[in-house]
Image (cartoon, rainbow, N blue to C red; front, side, top):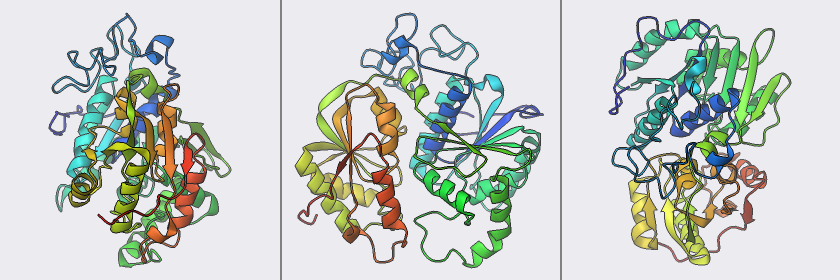
Length: 419
């Protein structure tokens, strides 16, 4: 794949028989595929890497000393370390792609997500992983073209890794594979819901989806979804692994491997800390769960109470909402170019990070382990929920907050003046 997202040729045969094929649709999914590949290969951060110094004595590109180095994260156009996967100072002579891992990016429409995915793809290639970019939603004929091009690699793959078991695209692709090894890596807190539904035998439905899930489109797609669910259920020679940093209780036969963000800690940081507090934005408004005005009130209250100056925007947050956060509340809005775990790990980052219930209250304490950063989570008051929000919303969000092992729990933000 080129820097502009164009697909690079794979060669006539594509991935070799028995190789691993991973499908991702978001930057976080791709990050967690890298974490899984690192853990699967037995990777563990060395003392030098954990201290932010690359082997050989050079500063890590994510530390303040390395940010401006050629190829460093702060250099113009630079996204990876100066060291390549096989070069002196890299994470390993073989790289994460040594086991024949190919990552297929099923590119979404959203430009922010596409931008972050391109940058994550650069990091993946730096680690020796083959990246195949598919404009899977690029027009009426794109899905058929994408599926047709992937049919051969899917049938040859010995192991399939997916980041979103709820994705209709991924579910359709799962019906075409013969692989007996299936791995689900984190797609954030949705992993908790996936494992719960798998254990209870329920259909795979996202937690924030409203209604019964039995509309016309759902009914047409139901056979495909049911087949994909069977593929994700262990049995016979079929093995299923969940690679997660979330607190999950797997059903019988499913292996759970802990994601400790070891690759992130080995590759970046430790960060320089500021004296301030940073707020982490959420897409709960955009997904129709939380009322916009109530959300802005809560952000203003948290900023006032904790002295926050920066607001790290979620990639799905609307421009209009972010304008009100900046102009009405006075926070500096930061649109990260990479998942927040990497942005925070490379720094600079506040000594305290405050978030609403989301994935980062589970992942940031792991990525920032040993740095002294405090992560706090603010409960979502039931009064903030929209009247048409999913009946499961409050319980799910409370579960996200209550199970965050290493995050300090805050009560709901006090009322603030409307913005």
